Image (cartoon, rainbow, N blue to C red; front, side, top):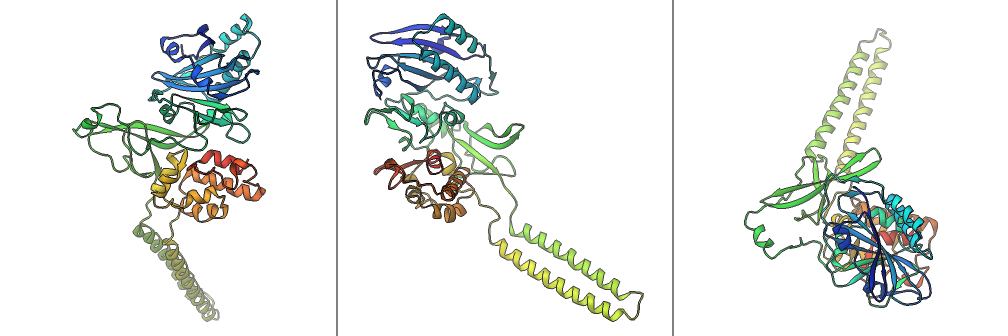
Length: 449
């Protein structure tokens, strides 16, 4: 059955499974005790508190809905939802399930009536994906957290981006915390402000013999995506290619690669439609256009010479001559303007800089300073220099979809007269001293709340 799975456990001195709905061996393995992570959360022991913990496993990912049990920390109830990698579940459907299960575990006791409602909820069947995604299991030794709420991205937006994220697998698990909660000091990695230390630009080696095989003629996989239009909006079509030789340009005619092409299943190489903007192609259009205009003027002049009225001929000839001179002057002017416009790109072009901005959720100072076209941007973002962001940076990085959203947020912030330094955590700069990463999405919501 194409359904979600639910595992309810109680973790106190010992951990015990209380109930299961649609169980499987994979799901049972994913529903592990999260006591170690719960112990790192700073919450009032006298109150019932709910938060989420996400962990990736080989066959999918698990969302632990944790409800603390007063008054002893870290005792808790854990309602684990296991989502197999083949299921295609919409963000709004998943949010409904999370809210319903959270309300159930917050009750004084889980009754049989509650269980019947949950069985009905988890009897829903979902579509299967055309192609199963590659799941990178969580295997880090540290925990991380991501905040949501009024001063951060909303939970709905987190769900819309997807809860399976390969970069989260570098941690043992990721805690999703309401803004009223936080981890104990220095106990978790803050995903709101900094990125992990793994270099995203390098393909990951899965096994000791992977590197020799790549240089011995064995096929290497590449993942590409192109934008497509669907009845319910725009989306991306992903496809995989294997090649024994490096792919260095777009495999589809009429499309260009945004930045460098990366090997391996963990990186997506995004393609954008390209246009023929060579000097020859544009000049050819101008010549044909100017030629057609001059031919039309000549025909008009000849028609004027053969007018029926003799007395009107000199005036007609003069008028035609005058029109011809004016038209030629206009044509020359148009050609001059077009020649000037030729030196300006008709639209911003993708580059290594825009590829970095679109392929990374968190923009790191060290990375940006190494990339031509990004040096100085981090400092302008961090210090709320909106005039620079909406001016020179917008002009040079206009091909980046992510940066376009930052520019739009900066423009709205200025028009609404929002004070980005309204809270001590983001004053006088957006980042606290020592933080060298900016999550672009969180930044947009802060400057344009």
